[in-house]
Image 1 (cartoon, rainbow, N blue to C red):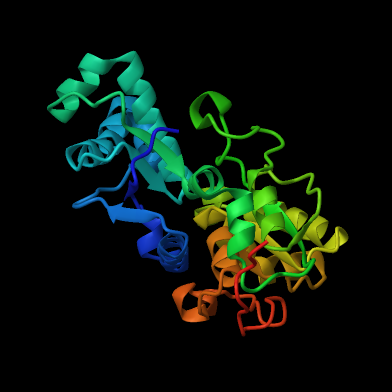
Image 2: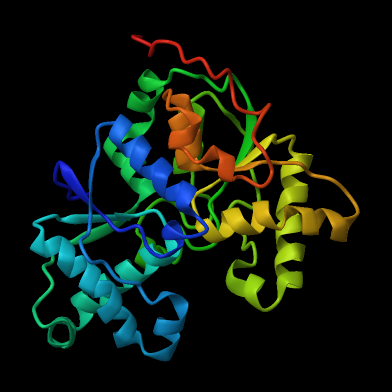
Amino acid sequence: MPMNDRVAYYPGCSLEGLAVEYDVSTRAVCRALGLSLVELNDWNCCGSSPASLYDPMLSATLAGRNLLLAQEARLDTVMTPCPGCLKALKGAIKTRDAHPQALAQALGRPLSERVHAVSVLQLLYEKVGPGALAQAVRRSFDGLPVVPYYGCLLTRPQAVAGFDDPENPVSMDRLLEAVGCAVADFPFKTECCGATSAMTRSDIVVRLSGRLLDMARRLGARAIIVACPLCQQNLDLRQAQAEKAMGTRFGIPVFYLTQVIGWAVGLPAQDLGLDKLIVPGKGVLPDPEPTEPSES
């Protein structure tokens, strides 16, 4: 993965609203692990799904402008925590490779082939890695049973994502194992939670998310770990609705990967937005008093 010491950071719209805890925990974790994030100046919305459905070139232009901002800042890699934003950025890169002149005309200048986009998961996995992360742990999760939930976009389609296995990804599993979690083999790790259907068909979201929560419980998971704002909201915010619809209680907290890693490396709760969870994580997270990092 081509990358300078500094990485361009594209938060995206969700991380300035309902997923602000994903933003603050991402910044805090990267800082703690020695990764220098440079937020793109004057970044714009990637267009999300509506732009690509309306006009693929519009989508490529909206996302491409953010890539161009990184290029102008002399940063080769753009990192975004949101899988939807990542898909848009990578889609713009595909358009650059297939139709460079058309995209250059829309953007007003060519987009360099050196500019690439990665998720925060890929950044942490490839730039830090499980081994170095394990050395930085100050609060081990001591075998806490969890399930990693990648969602349907983070590693798919493979031709666009270009990272991990599209059907059975393991990068998040390895990072969670590095901080002491006991990671269950979650068969629904790339199934859809309902995504944006929450806006118009909340019943679909309740059914799909309830299915995920039920399987997590069957596997003995005490927490679900995610890397997507929509996935977190559907599993956390609507968990009570799923409980009512299914006549049961789950009580499973849904953490962002960055929150789990941040807690493991000794960051305080306020730096990770842990108070934003609807289903509280108290009693699941290990002792708040961090120990010294391992030297082994």
